[in-house]
Image (cartoon, rainbow, N blue to C red; front, side, top):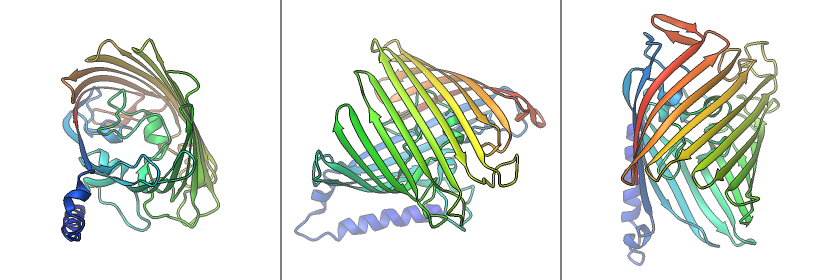
Length: 375
């Protein structure tokens, strides 16, 4: 079904351009449109060797002992950077893990687990002639929350596997209106009005709101302060989900980068709370990454994090977790990166599969090799 939808979208776009008046040739419209791409593949091995053939708590690389096409992405965009400029961006993705994990939901519609396509982003941009230029985006876009990203040609994470904070404490995408204003090189502010967490169509009558302050008080230092709040439960406009997030990135001596990510979230009368039916829920976590770039071709990235889900609202189990990940990085020529990885996961509950026994271990060790290409 989704394949036919993508095919129809492509045909409609082609017909639209073919129908442009003679006074405005299609080549004039398309000449400023940039096309970029990203392909990520990997091999994942779970040292627990589970019969389930799964890597637990890893939606983006969940298939154990298997080669995987995680995602292939095409991006079409027209820049809008100056006052009164109009632009757009559309990210179409295909793959066997990432699209399924981040796909936005529609109220009352059951998404098929076999849907391998997703429109990750699709928004129109206008730079309003206000002050230094107020950038307005309307449509679907990737969340501002968290330190890590879904990954694409223009941004990828230091580690191949994502953090627990990325998977379980924040949304992936939003649909709504985003406004960004840059005061100067030291301060930028952003505000958003949204349908909510990963909702293309809102599941209630309320809206969620997000504020993001970007500060660069000194060279090679970036501090991001973010807050999001709103009703997220289906047909419920009263119970509020809120999350506060702080990211700090510091680069030392041009080769050593330190990144910290702190998240604190809560939800009122959460139906996913496994401690008390419809009880309030809280979750929090802290992650840190050390990156040492020995050269333009080689770097090593080490991440450590803790995640508290004492109400079981985010992972489905009352647990405290932590993990350590080591990811060497090799750049091949300019557009290809190879990343071997070792990761050690720990929970205070038996949640990891081992052999024929599901949820029988408190630890999980994995090794992987990831290769991605971008242009």
